[in-house]
Amino acid sequence: MTPPEQLPDADLHAYVDGELDDAGLIEVEAWLAGHPDDAAKVHAYQLQKRQMHRLYNDADGEGGVPERTLDLIDADRPSAWLPGWRRMAAGIVLLLAGGLGGWFAAGLGGGDAPSPGNQFVQRALGAHVVYAHDENHAVEVSGGDETRLLNWLSRRLGHKLMIPNLKGAGFKLMGGRLVADKGDPAALFMFEDGKARRVSLYVRPGMSGGNTKFRFIAEHGMVAFYWTNGALTYALSGEMTQGDLLSLVQMVHDDLTSRSS
Amino acid sequence: MDKRAALTDALADVMRYARALTRNADTAEDLLHDCVARALGRLDQFEAGTNMRAWLFTILHNIHRQNLRDASRRPAPASLTDELAARIGRPGDRDDRLALRDFDRALAELAEEQRAVILLIGLEDLSYSETAEVLDIPVGTVMSRLSRARGKLRASMDGNVKPSLRSVK
Image (tube, rainbow over all chains, first blue to last red; front, side, top):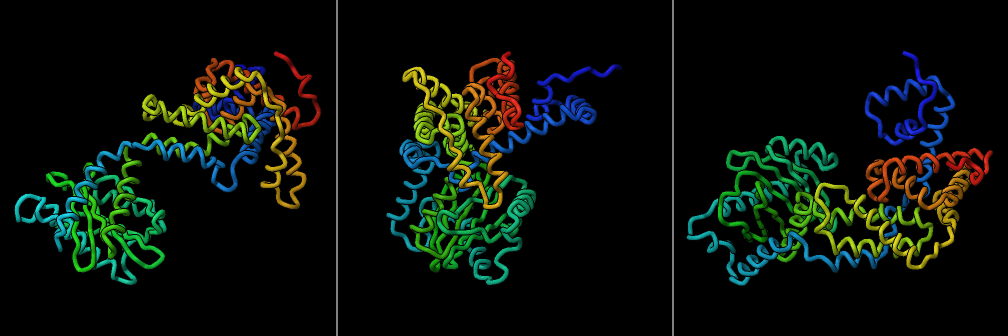
């Protein structure tokens, strides 16, 4: 086989821009090894790309998007998740208006028998009480390595989990642990804010059979709220007012929904 | 991902591209704003799973073309160098800063249609076919504009050829 006299300029660009398949890549690399002039061209093109990034990447990370444009998006937010959330919020209002102590939701599940949802949220609240008050061992795996934590718990639960971002409310991820929920694996993520308040998100699959889609309970100064979203059921628990917890629930729900849809 | 969230995530890149393309901060902000307004109005036309940034670049270019036609004026390419160099440059990096300034100047001298291609591919990492779609031109034209633009930049970086006298294909 006689090697070509000249490599088309287009191939050099395609090489620089990652447009070549494996065979093309090997061919061009072999060519460049023996043709310093073309190698210099490639080098120059690559340098141009880097220079463009240096010129135009915004060092502040804000991107310089003007307020008025961001406002435009905020103003135009009927949003896909709202209907679901509105239904949920309407339910909460109903429950709160009932003014029940203790089990806010006792009546909604249908009858006096504790529904699976009732039992679930109570177990979540129990786990929160046990672990959130453990000064040094609140979590099994720290949140420092979020990917590892998430991969591990996703594998154990057999579902792809997500960790909501609660930084907007001042809560940082401490970490998580695997817990046994009635003999099934469940995950618990613990968050803490600057005032050392802790909230935990308790999540497990296989609870979506029931009719009740949300539930709110308050016990011993603790509040917990649970809801089902697709295959996963969540409970958020913390030692705070109902209003504070609900705004966190909204944040979790918003974040998880926007990333999963 | 939610379309609106995808749009919000893409804004910084679209802003960056608008600035690099128009080389004028005010023009770029107006362009971004109009682009977002139009995108919000037709968000249901965006196909989930396709490239949100490419979609926004396409809208941005449509508006930009319209603006240029309407006003039939092209803002003089003002160099953003001073602002940029002030941000990037560290004291002691003088040669490096000068090289970057020369590069910026060479970018400014490119025809805008060539600059668009080199920015979409080199800065925004679009593929050749995505770039062709955004600019509504054949892939072959993308490649020839890219090749010419890079050749001019290289010549002016080497500092030994006057870009305007280089090959006219």
